Amino acid sequence: MVTTGSGLSRWDRVQGALPYLLVLLPALFALLREWRLEVLVLALFAVAWHWLMVTSHPGWITRPVVLIAYFVVLLAVVGALVRIDTVFTVTGLGAFVQCFALLPGWWAYGGVAVTVGVLIAARPQLGRTPVELLGSFVVGVLAASTVGLIIKTISDQNDQRKVMIAELRETSAKLVALADENANLQAQLLTRAREAGVLEERQRMAREIHDTIAQGLTAILTQLEAIGDVPPSARPRLDTVQATARESLTEARRSVQALRPAPLQHEAELGTVLADLAANWSRNSGVPASVSITGDPRPLHAEVETSLLRVAQEALANVAKHASAGRVGLTLSYMDDVVALDVRDDGSGFMPEVTDGEGFGLIAMRQRITRLAGNFELESAPGQGTGISATVPAIPAGPEPGL
Picture: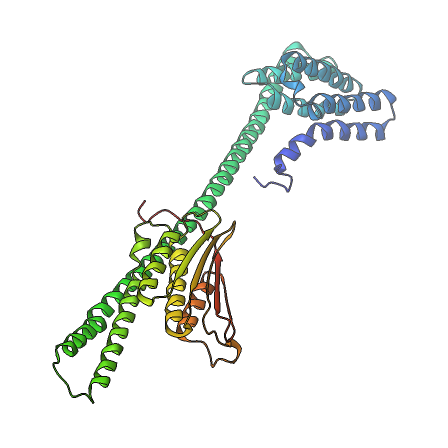
């Protein structure tokens, strides 16, 4: 059943307009043939009565008393019109439609029988016998019941289609919601798979560095330390080789530690991890390093904490290599939407704007932070130390995979 933009089907519109048309059209023909005021008054009253009782107040007609009053008045008016002009016999069709639309079950057929009786009684008999009147009544009831049954069937099918359409819309809405949920779940699975792949690749690289470079440097140092007396002229070169090998071994181990940050994997707070890192770095470098925390510490996403830890490790490594600093300060600031890490030293500093590009360490730090939609800033000047500031979104820690 085709529906209109207002949600009503064509049948709904036809069914609603039919009672008015079956009154107004016969009235128009009757008035064109002979002007009579009573025809106009009764026709307008019938239209107004139906509009008041059915169209404008559909809740009234659900009460039995009101329903009976509606049909009594309607049939009285129809009977008066038929008595005046037999063209109003077609108005009875509208009454038949209302019987099947408003009366429940078998009461509809009773209403049809009463309507047929009113129509036959209102028509001039012109000497017709009782048998003929009875035959007209039976034929009229059967014909009207057949038409009414067809109308009732169409109306029921229309109602069923409405229910089916409503169910289909509800099902469609549920399917759309389910598709959105599946898309979100798929995105989460892809994110977790990517994170798992990144972690696995880091662990693989850590194993490779440990099993190849670190082991090779350890073997070189072992061989160098096993060398006995050497000529005095060769001692400086041997000491240089040993120092370079030790420094390279330290860097390899630091790379392994950076790829596999064990403290973060054991659910330690980032501030605690930074404090341990600074303490170990101070013991190895001999430069005091302090850590201060502001704001309300809270667990963050593993990628956020790992990135800030890498920045701290790289920054301290650069201080040890290049800064000749007397002290270093690390500040971890928790704010509403972001978390910031500042690393500042009082070392020799440099001029970033005239430096021939950034070192690999600075590039790696900047890439880590910008990958998280964060901000990375570097401040330095000759003789005034260096400051590094990394700010990233404070993404809260999510559930562990598999939970």
